[in-house]
Length: 294
Image (cartoon, rainbow, N blue to C red; front, side, top):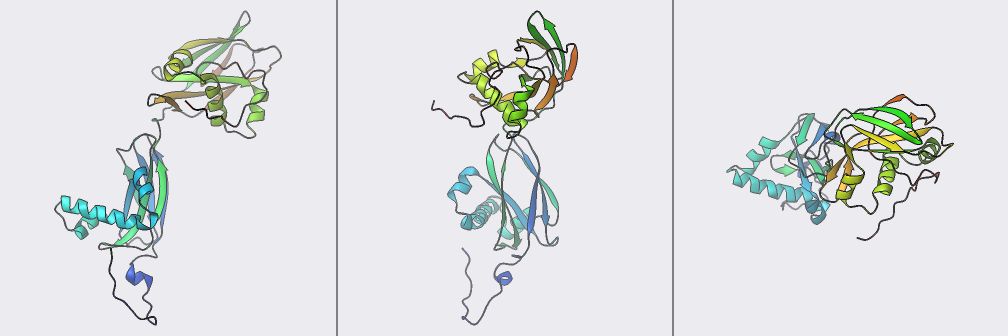
């Protein structure tokens, strides 16, 4: 709580006197994230003014009203200063930033949402206005994986011989007619299409069943039947990793390639596991997912 001297109606105390540096503005740019860290570029409109860059977790920003958040943060800093046997002003100065800075926040929870709070400060008095930005860590750490794929035919089956560059990562592959993909891509990104196909095939399965029946690791040969007259087909590929005990998340960019069952001995680049079969004759992909109670 801050106490100020009263003044008459005729006297107007400038905001910058009550709250120094309140006209300083900040830009925040998220530059990198992992499952346990996030990095940001910070830029102040006045390179000489000290400022603080703090963050809170979901529980805190849901419980503390935005108007009281900076005051809450200063109270917490005061407790930290006492624990460090320091005066608050000295403690604040030790963590203050100036000008353009690059900061990295570590030891975060995977897939968690946080709020970054940046504000100028004079001694122990924060500016009236703060800059806020929500951010979220990745559910899993991303990887880069390439896939060498050879397409051939054996009897009535199309064979995909897949050789991933990362032998210890689980991968999933989805394939569909190019006409179906072209139709879906007018409203959906490759990630949305890929995850739609994955969810269709994984529906009703436990995570253990998904690992047993859908995901592959290392080199593998996939065999499937393409209806006559299908023509060009699209494959979509991405490494998948578990999130907790009941979910899976993308761990790489979704890549895609073109193949034609009638043109064999092709070499593609980048793949992922088992094939969904239910959508071959649908000609469309559902955009709206149905949430069902467990």
